[in-house]
Image 1: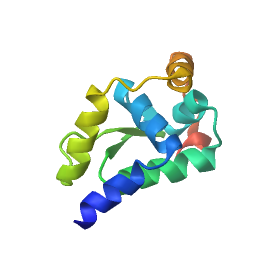
Image 2: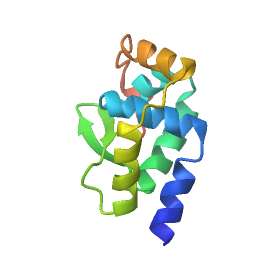
Image 3: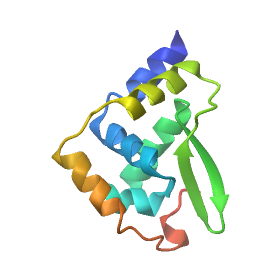
Length: 116
């Protein structure tokens, strides 16, 4: 039951929902998430950490970057089920459309953008 509560709480925030929708498009480092959502590094890192802690994301190192992606093999079965629901949902609005458009133009800007 605690895994379900943690997963639901993680998705109860608009910023985290927007992040998750971006990460459904492709894996991203913190600086790419920052650019796509037009938010600060601390806000991006904090919210990525919450999504990871709830079982939605996996992390890997790619050179100097820490890269986040959706964890489809998560141990938390609730997170996996909710991730599939969000992937398949037709949720769309102007903000998400703008996020996806900005994502197309993001660049990895250097080691200072990573969560360490």
